[in-house]
Length: 604
Image (cartoon, rainbow, N blue to C red; front, side, top):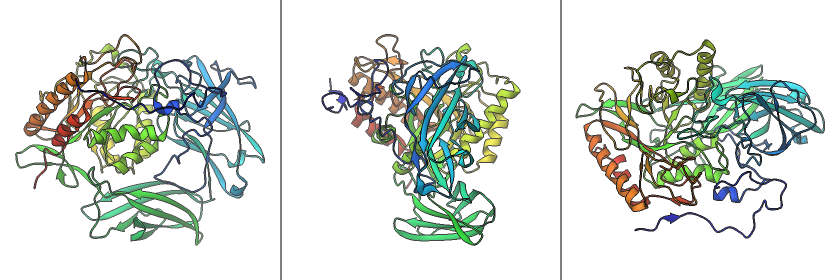
């Protein structure tokens, strides 16, 4: 038997939080990054690298918290301290308590606005909070937001005072006791359903902006016309124009300008670099906003020249294409869960680690499964060269009343409130991720979970973002709409349906289980679709499935998704353990066969 590669790093004697005010809650397994947690410097990286300004203030760290019955006003008495931005149910929050729909979670902390920001407006940003959020600054309500997966912000300038300011946040999160999108969260975790995630789970930060400032950027490449188009949305009056400069390293290679409200069309150089998994080239952007004849605001961004499309090949099979070339897209189902932080990675290094390992395993794509990640995750994919299939987190009716793999073929009927909320949150997710080059496919539904009005939702998604492909429903229910037919088959791949007019893809397969003592969420109840006793057996099964997939790619499959990147709670079918300390399969053998699959459609 070949030795399993262990990734555990040697730790210093004692823990950095052994005598601290904060320590992780519970006694479950943890990642090496959690063991090195610095409470004074939590997720210190700039949280929005696709639209960056120099000045900002990170509000992560220890906040006061209280759990109170819903409708009860908060007082000055709190239950203790919580480490933001980790959900209250997580170990890294230092709390490890459930919330439930009958309660509300209150946060409070103080902050001071740097004196250098005088004369500017101040925005309060939340990366993501699950689910309904109310915010006060100095007892003045500054805003409300619903939705658990997208960033939001409030202009708090008028609520600020000199010296210390008080920030109060209230969160209500019913999880699966309501219609909200929630992904794999469950109030009764078991099997493929995991621990709830309530409250703040991404970075909270302050940012100074001028009176007229850039709010959003929307970047669209067109490699056929060699154009890069930017739509800039700004706030304030008297805005004149927008100017954009494009850089290849330190060298400016293109520029353009337009009156405000008119898209900026940048003609790219003739020898343009195309982005791909093998060549993830990014251009740097300098975006400048002018108002009343003067430079008002300036942000740094980046973009890539790439194209996602489909086309029929010489054998009559409709294929997925990247940059007008056939590409077999192959990657892991990536849940994005952590044993210590749940939805939140313990560090930025950890956040990038799973992506790097996908590349190490020879994949060129990741399916982000019923979860949306922090902005930095998508930037890591852009920089490392990974195509992303982005799921909409499921919600509304629980799929547990259905068989795990078979459906009655009918969409559910949502209430008007549920349907409106789905549309709102799906639009916000697309708006949030629109400019990231790595996003190649939108997936509005998975396995009939809360699936409704599929042709209508797919048509809207295609209209709203014609630059990407749309996978109507990964695993069904199936409709003749969108850009592909997506099958699920466990454990071995099987081409049991075929669409002659769209690419046929295998949205899930595999699930090879291998529990490793000392690295499981629980000692019992662990499961995989098939289970093996050691790494050699599991690797051999993986390679067997991969060889079958390689053969099926010649007969119709154009993409595939292997379940999955890591173990998650009681699921032990990951390529790595949940704590990321052990690579369970032979990495070299997996990489060898994966690269063969990814290049199976290459043409001279």
